[in-house]
Image 1 (cartoon, rainbow, N blue to C red):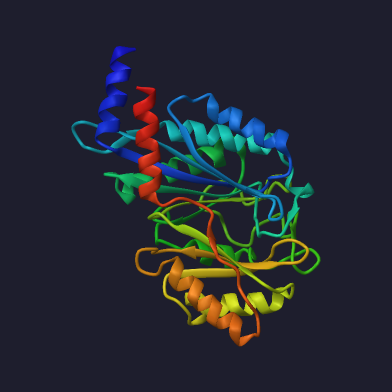
Image 2: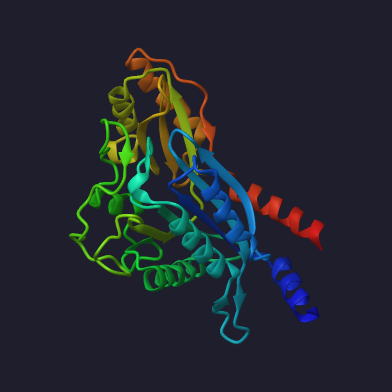
Length: 315
């Protein structure tokens, strides 16, 4: 026990940490979320640093942090508690949630839609990719779910949005603005990176990657016309010729509002203020007002600070 405490103390002091963002397509079934969180609590070396849930989108994101142990002779990563914990949470999600009963205003391709690992502290992107591939193998082998890899976890660095576009992620399949159940063929047109080509309709697929920290920033649009909001989103995104390193999608957010959900891939280069201003200008051209945007997550610096305070208190 004393050796274990020393190991954890040394690891913490060296800040060898990884973060994980785990996106699950459910936020209305509280019993399901409770079972997922109980699975995480079985591993005391894992900290859930943040939980963001949206009932309209019907999704939740957990942000987890834990350490990585390296081989002393090769400096290669050999163990992280995140591997077992993420697998346990995913298994609990599959047991409690049926994708065929899901509907919400946010795109999804599976009960567990996206898992991304991020380096924190002194860790490198290679360590995040190492863990992403381990978790992908666990999920595909033990839970028989197709897995697609992205960014540093993919052999050629294929991007998350490219995979999603290939799989029809951005196309609503219910009432023109909602996503419901599994609407794609059960046999995938392209082979996943791990797991079967046959998709279990109750679980869907999962996309797993490793990347630098990405911020998520949403801007409410004062309009119920989602087609206009989508048009603004296309213009603000890098793909549409807008802001570099910004990805955006226009979504319904309740009965009387819409918003633009943005990924800030390099927030230190193009930040929230720039995005807010650009969306405001584009909305004004459409005769619309915008509300103040909001982050749905913390910066890596804030996550590290919260983690250090928590670990110090526990010690």
